[in-house]
Image (cartoon, rainbow, N blue to C red; front, top):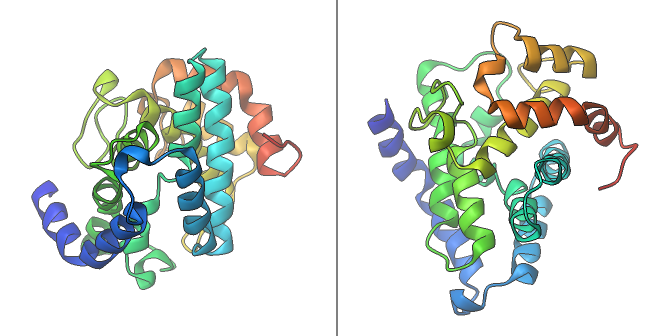
Length: 233
């Protein structure tokens, strides 16, 4: 299936990958690409996203910086994760809207296509000599990998998954559980917390880095406050 995903990602994502790379280059040396340029990129991605997606991206960024702080990561690493987390789903820009917005379950082919957003996102953001985009590329590529090895696109497990992606994984799952989507209703905070910590048949605690999960549990009420708009980060 990985080979199929690679082939599909090459076909459906050529235009979007090329367009995003042109935008990032902006006729500048990649060596001069700094935080201001990444802020412009974040603004661009948010502006062309629908309201639901834009809110999701901003909230995930806020959750991620809280966990990075809770884990005691250095200031530079926190800044990299701050920028990278909001770009985790950038590959979805290349996925057909009829799949992104489909109500109900995906067919096998649609699921394979949807899963290629990780490969496409990594392709869009890779090869730039800028720490913000290097971390963003690994987050985009690996944020659906799982600690127990059951994720995609490569089935990585444990510390083979970059820490930045392990942080974004729990943030992404929490926000997805809380949010209404074309194929699901929204969960309350307590139901989402239970699903992540105890499992609900789809989400399982072994999907997450135990240290990251422990940080999430400590911060869970702050996550709720961010989701409901009661906490600015």
